[in-house]
Image (cartoon, rainbow, N blue to C red; front, side, top):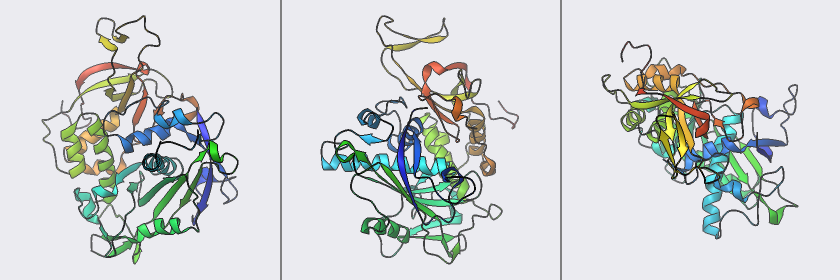
Length: 397
């Protein structure tokens, strides 16, 4: 595994996550964490590009090209961007990836929906059990609405910058205030508290190598309200299911399954006689060797499918190195369940399965997340079925 080290600062955590404890017998946090760069790119891709990124290889995304040699996450020179505007934009984009990575790896949050998709306009019927509106004072709202596999709905705010960050600073106070800029109402129109997380990243560079190391500052504030929000799955629409649906809507959109993506995003049912067209692929390498996915590869010049050989070959085999297309897909069983959900079986998402992780076997250019998505070199996969997705368990083809 290729990783880089960053410092960690936690504040106001009721309980230190088990993965961040210095030892199992104490509630003291570690001072440094290792960042999996492939997974960091995976979150960066989801948050930054709707379709094909400029370079889809999870081991070669843009910020990595500007890191210094050594074990810590540090940028060359003064950081990414030739101007202050470019630096601010790129630092925020990477800050959002760090936020998602941290919450995924250490807080157990798997599913992410941008707050802009639900603020004041809940498109999905599941959000009828959770209404989020701006407070009368206005101001910026947190970035994400997040969920675990099991119970729990959370807000999250991401920041990335090169200047100083501290929990006692005016900047951090303003980020906390963003949680006061939104009001959360339950299905009975009562204001409820909703737990959230601020994850702010300050980047280390060559110019401040002696004094500053890239550091994650994480805190867990709450919104104003009478009592904690309870997303009771037995009482009608379910906000956690709506977040999961929104999360996978973005994934299906990337796979070109637009009707089914719209169904997941808005909550309407697709006629069962309509089946999504997709290619089924098999993974050839550990830790997912033998597992099947639906998906495809990011197109790039210089490579084509040879049906007689059953493989992809470069147009010019004399050119070295050959093109390196990247496969993107979602695990077949999860995809089948999602299709059934679009047919009106939304309740299936309450107990959606997650893909197991086996980090000790995974290569640095292979990124797989619990939501079933995978980014890896095309060479690690082969197409096995040119057919429709067949939703399992409903008796139809």
